Image 1 (cartoon, rainbow, N blue to C red):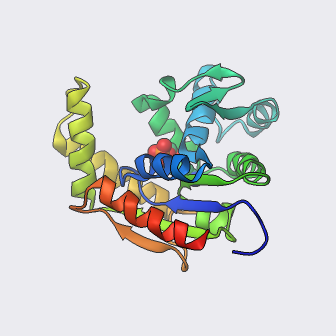
Image 2: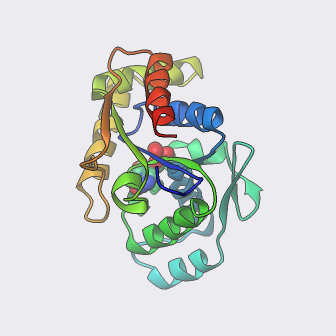
Amino acid sequence: MGTNSHIKVAIDGPSGAGKSTVAKRIASAIGADYIDTGAMYRAVALKLLRCGIDPESEPERLSDMLSTTTVDFRSGSTLLDGQDVTGEIRTPEVTAMASASSALRQIREKLVELQREMGRSKSVVMDGRDIGTNVFPDAECKFYMTASAEERARRRFAELSAAGARDSYADVLAAIEKRDYDDSHRALNPLVRAEDAILIDTDGIGIEDVTDNMLAYIESLL
Ligand code: DC
């Protein structure tokens, strides 16, 4: 694995494939930092909503905002300008704004720079859409995790129902299909499997087994 003592693990794939569950477990098993890049796009989206900025028609306000914005992680929490926004970034409004605004060059450039900085001096497990293709094309280990839209909708629907939400399965499936389409059809760094990423299809496989297999592979590289 070369002379570097730190390792970068890239995990990409569509929403609901189980990336964050697996990435957290792998990070804790190998003593790396877990970086949820989706949470970073969500934090910026929350700030756009709070400031009332339309990122597409107000590029100058967007650029001023980005130049004074910090996004960081501390013990599993997402910090926006030092404030814990872990819960607030999961609302449907923020999800919609994150999906739309993550297509914009200014936002991607700012967050990709922060992500590369985070991986410079320590081991990281990073999940997102463009980690293996764009953020760390040189990552030692790349995975592309997926599952059918129906399977992902079933998992998300179960989570939402358990939390008391009233969304129907059909709504959840439609939202997942729309986000898949938008994430993989945007012009800049769309969701696509890197040629050298290992494909993990999690349809019908328990998350424990998935994690164990990925860990065994990573440990064989260390
Ligand atoms: O993984 P998530 O649902 O929390 O991501 C929120 C949005 O951010 C999603 O619509 C796609 C976008 N995103 C991205 O464009 N690039 C990444 N590396 C991670 C997320």
